[in-house]
Image (cartoon, rainbow, N blue to C red; front, side, top):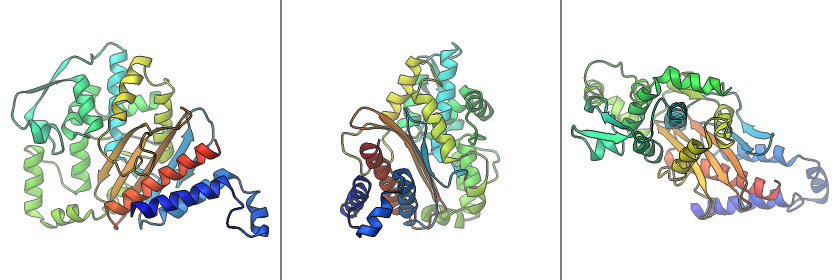
Length: 340
């Protein structure tokens, strides 16, 4: 499948590089009048047809002013991509002297949320980690426990949304931590007990929830819920604010982007079809029928473009979702290399 995807990407590259290839003289004459950015948008739409869900895309050079989108204005559940905003809010508090990267934070066992990281490797009481290490776990491993600890340190979801608004980022809002987002995705009414206890009780009461989780069955009301959602262009705005140094100090901008470059999740998404040496600072998100990846991609000349790709409502599965994201990222990469 990867070989086919590479051929597809190569074909798109050729079309962008030379619009007259494989066309009749009359068609070639017409093709010369088509704006390359229009053709890129058309390529995004073509690639999106591989999934039966809805795909949202936004791309823009960091030093540019023109962006290309697909389904602009449509909101998508952020899933774990909201963790970028949490990290930004934390680091803005560090900039103001309200928090320190080396300060130690105790992880209350009651707030542990299942995911790779703390829940798997440190399940017993007695965990205390620096703010910096919590950021690392949240962004590189998508650790849900670290995220919920940091969301509290940020001042709660409302404080994260307030930080976004202070940057002029609209179209994106944070309303809950990961535990609350997961409860809503699985139609679980929060009650007493730990996250693990509540999930176990909910699945025992309604085993169909587990089946839906295993199959990644779309939850349409959740997918359309404006809470904890973003438009592709709103996420693009946030990435561009961060990269340009308008969101944080130079030191903490570097802290954030360095961690995002070490992201271990989503190897088959934005990075999947890019040259192996490509530097990508990104964050993924996965939940039921949702697959996302957003970030900053460094081009061979050292310039950078921001990209946000969201997929919701897909029933074909992870392989298809990730292939769509990878091929869209490659199409954008080829466009910026060839067209600028």
